[in-house]
Picture (tube, rainbow, N blue to C red):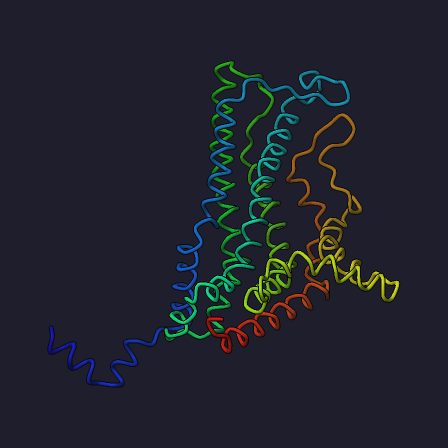
Length: 322
């Protein structure tokens, strides 16, 4: 064994072949490293989901009332219970979305800054891994891996939550106000997945800008992230009397959802209307996905994200432990 290792070490081509890895393999290893180092990316959603499941186990009473009419007096009781089931499914995803926004923002602003702060960048830069792949791995974790992990946690967690509620309703512990329907459950999950993918694409330049701040921001990128969106529009307003920056930030934050929703409902989601409920999956019939993917601003945003990530990689290449 020792002679084999010695022979291999003495062969430059064999050593290079042994050390060199395909970029995809290296990228996957870097992503695993990010999830290992920043465990809050998946621990935080798990903790929130565990709390929601515990809530389903201890909730003592449920009652649904709309405009003074009792839920049980409606004509199509089963359809309304199925709709309530999907609305609950939707509502339970909201805390996870809030947590996702928090952990991704923190991660994007901290991941490159932390390695400068604790000087671990000296170690990572000594490895045969390019700055481009390193920055790309962090962008993929923030934009793709963390959202999909949260989505998977929400999917499994709600099935457990619904199962607990179903058992309690069957035993008479709480009133029967929801009804499980496999098709509508799937349509609701698909609705949320579509919205998640749109968000991943639309907010890519925001995450890329945070990563650039993380590698460039001195003394603290968190101050830049908090103050710049407030101070810059204020300075523009005082100096020029205009509000282009504020309008742009508002547009970049919310406009895509109006584009996605501009279907038969003309931009208004109709889950609750009058004295009736509609399954969340009906939003799929109202989504204008074609308008989203033909929106020039979506593609310009992705181009801007690529440019910002390139700049972050270049800055990381030239930065030192300070």
